Image (tube, rainbow, N blue to C red; front, side, top):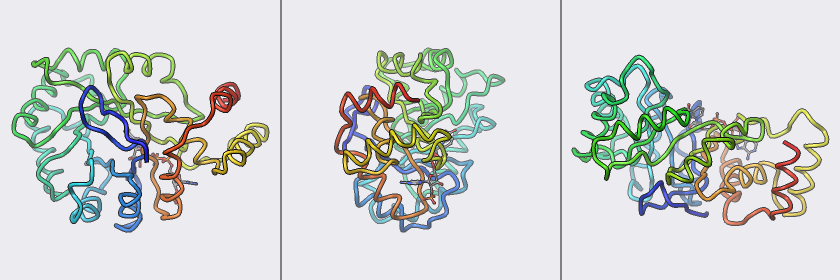
Length: 264
Ligand SMILES: NC(=O)c1ccc[n+]([C@@H]2O[C@H](COP(=O)([O-])OP(=O)(O)OC[C@H]3O[C@@H](n4cnc5c(N)ncnc54)[C@H](OP(=O)(O)O)[C@@H]3O)[C@@H](O)[C@H]2O)c1
């Protein structure tokens, strides 16, 4: 497993982590993932999976980088503090490694939400502040809303896969410049490993065969080709977990990347 720098911090985070939206695998697959280096586990108060994640990491908390999210309806100051405390209880941990605003909420001033985030940092209840589904403009506003220059937005979790490469236009370059990690969600397009195009499927199969990898591994490797991008595929199935972990630790050639880039 390859590890990448988280934002502008000294923390290293797994290139392939484990998502838990609609996760129903119990503790097994998550533990297999941790043993293979997929130590970044992503959840959210909205997913209803925090208890399971807590159970899976209980005896190996130190190995895991745990991220969770506050729902957009809970980002008034006091609500956000309460939401974080409830997540900590459900997860059975003392500190959340990365706490994110799940979606922007234009009806609540971002300054108010960020002041609560900074309070949680001061109290040691969270280690890092992140956002999710924020555009470049929303991200800039969130960065500006922080009161202390030492406090930073370290990551933005957004959809990124072969069917949706929108973020390459503005978000990826902006985040690179600002040293913000992009956490790619739905990196396997929610399990659509096969595309609508026979030609594109054959291309991916050819590249997979040549590299002695699978299509899913080629896709995940492509998604994480930039230094500031990591991914969080979700897998109920232990074999999928093993396959996804082995999508890291090697790199597609420039030529293979160019071919995929042109095809999708
Ligand atoms: N911030 C947000 O708003 C947001 C939104 C969506 C998702 N997320 C996060 O991102 C995570 C991942 O996204 P996602 O769950 O939407 O989609 P995904 O990871 O792209 O796809 C999950 C689907 O792919 C299948 N799969 C996994 N590995 C596979 C493999 N190697 N080969 C074939 N199929 C494979 C899974 O099957 P099995 O389960 O049967 O193994 C599941 O059906 C979520 O769990 C969540 O943590 C965040």
